[in-house]
Length: 519
Image (cartoon, rainbow, N blue to C red):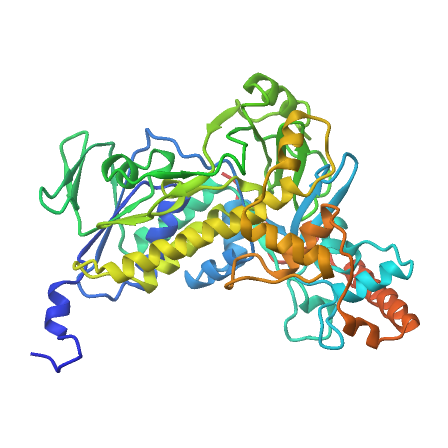
């Protein structure tokens, strides 16, 4: 027997998870398989099996990501240049928003920082002071990521040069979701993951506990497990259909519920800017994700305000090249399962919830779920404390991202359609309402509970969407007016000069040997 207050090792081994079954492949399934087989490979007796059917398609239509993807790839030991080659990836320095504030207006939500903090306060207060003194320069001009992105230029940040603009930005990727899943599958299988092909026709449960005990394939094969990961997409086979966990519907705040996706060819010439583009349309918005070998396009819209035929026609009319496939239609509801973890089932990806890809958060939510499950990895006792914490933190993730997405719709001047009238006048969630009031009052931005989006992100969208601050931090007046104006001009000049010296994205890909592998 072990010491009092300490777990008995033999007892812990008796309760250890021996079999982890991942239901569904795609990006979420293979991210999960690759991560757990890499990090937990040394756990005694742990086996990981992924079940998927080639007959069941995945939603993946091309992915834009946020900088956290770099951390995930590093965790897996992935060489960045190899990843870019294998997935047809391009680099991403932020998202450009077109026509969101008003028709003809555009701004960039960059990855990184604006200017430099001075006098112990954030840079935006000096920018706000400068506006009052007659400096009409855009906030974008102080962002290395925004300026370089619009110029079509890229290089990796230099964290070893803290005083340089090259240390003030980060980056992500735009890549082919199908290629990424295939790439991760090869790594996962090499790390010992067993892949089983087949369509699940039945889920078996323990009569007393209701725990899932096995999934049964069309050919009669039983696949048993201790812990089941539901990566079955919108179907939510285990957490929803089998365990009956309900869904929190956020349609009143996020009314878009349809999407149509169509890839197209690249126009001739230089690769596109290293930016994802989101263009507001009369009943939603259009994404543009430039990869090395094609451009991913999609139109997210509200079916209450536009038909599928209208949405498709509008998308086809705004492609940069020739369509490469038939339209792919997707139905969804914004929101999340009431619980991401119920009994011995954990839902990751679309099985657990969906938030439209306006800020490229889908892969991050999978990644965050994987990290959270690693931290709270259970034994077969499945203790309530770990499950409750997992569910609480998962809901917080969704709620904080939801508020950030709603900001884009709420803070707008557009009144040219019923859709935009609805969005402009909707009552925001309480957390968002507090952030809006604080910024309007004094230009201050606060990040709550280590939420995903930083103060810079909130600032970029609030300013980009036309919100005005009535004041700024009093410490900004510690700098004389002429010194404030001189410093602002100097920062703009250094940022622009640094961007001008960068290679183009195409040049950088060639330099790094990262041009896509064909086939």
